[in-house]
Image (cartoon, rainbow, N blue to C red; front, side, top):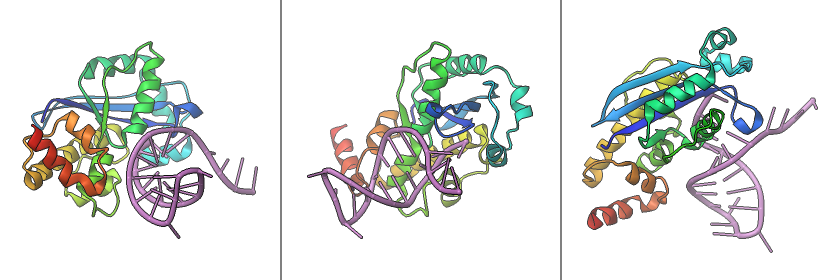
Length: 204
DNA sequence: TGCCAGGCCCTCTTTAGGGCCTT
């Protein structure tokens, strides 16, 4: 697999447009199917953490108050991932926060996101659902720690990506999984997955 | 009081509606 950066945000809500801010981010670099570098930090954006978010994630107001400023963390994580292609589970969510938090420090995203949830819907159509935790159990992925914390979810997404690559290699004899192929697969109609991959292999 | 975003996908569709998924 080509070298990719996988990220996951914990936030105070669902939309930066509604005032939600990031509370934690994790990123890993996946190289040849192995996690070779980690970045993880809580961040203080100067907002209160709603009670139900603390219940969900375990992230408290005290933890955020003691964390480095959001601007410092975003500069660090943006430098950490550099121009590597980005991957996230339900990437439309993380892309919104990545773009919003980066814009606050005067930076803009240079690369595209690929989405493991959209690809998993096609690769694992019989999974009970396509939540990250459900897919981890369905594919019997290694335990990565407490769900709904940024590094645990980031590592789980990395394991899911590797498992999907193995599945696609076995099922369709693809050579390897690239970011470009992920971007194609996430837009293919579920029923067209097989024919689309075969066409891509023939064209390669 | 009740509701709250947005992109994607499916279908009893396309001049739409509702479920999924993320926090």
